[in-house]
Length: 209
Image 1 (tube, rainbow, N blue to C red):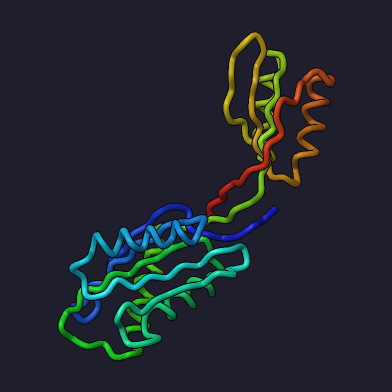
Image 2 (image 1 turned 180 degrees about the vertical axis):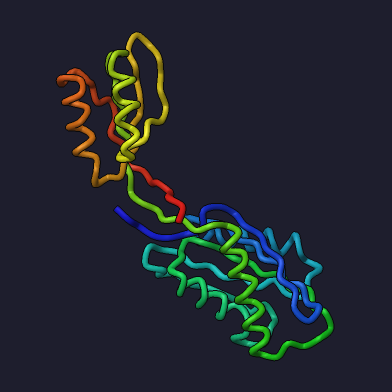
């Protein structure tokens, strides 16, 4: 089941216009506090910069949105970044665009375009992914089943994760939650009902787009 779209990993980018340097840092986050900690860390790292403009979006429906202009003219930096990220359908992300002023004023429109372009470059470098609700099914079964299971894995409905080689095979199959029932049926049919489901755990899967 699709939950939301976010960045795949941390990312950085640099954008230069009229001698001003814009350095973007992006981080996937799961909470507002985590986002604030990221913003604080970047501000400390670039405390000599002219501005460190942050934006945070959280929630499957982008319910929580926050940005600051950090001393830039009101509405010229944080809010344009926030709008661009929201329009891309991305959430659970924190962004900080650091500016080193180059001596040439960009004007309100120029500032908005520069901050937006810098943030967008950061998103592209971080990569975009979709988060789906998944299921980890841990089974124990006979050794003779493993090769057949690995062959069935090729159809893409599930992925074999951790495998333990004991007196029997103990393996975890990861699938999307909507496929869980069909995977359970497959395991039952494949082992003539002898596979033992040891754990049925809900989780998340990231799929790059």
